Length: 241
Image 1 (tube, rainbow, N blue to C red):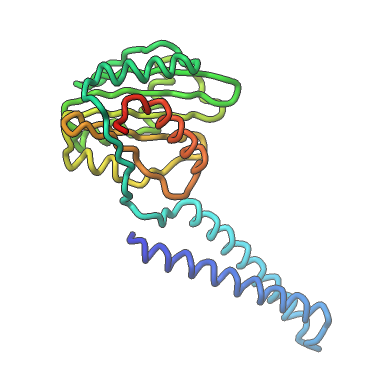
Image 2 (image 1 turned 60 degrees about the vertical axis):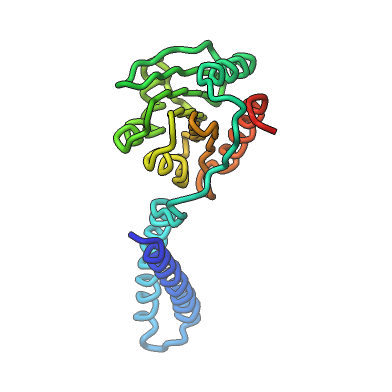
């Protein structure tokens, strides 16, 4: 469904809910004052019916507002230039920063033809996960295979860690060069869930460019911004000034 159709649908539901609420209040007040004479009982029943319809409409409105995403599908990622294109050096530098911040040491993970490492930090309320993914080329198949929320939970299952509260996951996907699938991955508008917040980062070694995907509104926007700010601080030494 196109965004304009989504907007029309949501606005229609909101408008109808507002009208039904006004009608219900009006009928409830006027019938309570017995302004309709012999027909007063009919209008009392009508006020109950309109209130019931309003309640159903309000529930549908809340469901739609939670389920329908009206945000733009494509956004402009932040672009930062790297001093070097040595992947192992970039990863080692980040690992040192994360270990200093309390993350466990690097763990290797086998997945298709990708080279994957991850680091985990646990505290009382939040699990933090950093995943380094090195592939030659991003493809549509790999992009969906690395679907953030599912992939992160796979790693937690592997570590026998139960997600009880929040999970913050930073993905650092490094490729040889930019492809249409890589651009699609970095330019999509991030959609968070209530429990899991993700920060997708892409690195093109050929152009020595780092891309940080953008989130516009939605769940966990402040957690996303906090993760983004921290990552930029961690990568700062590797950036061109």
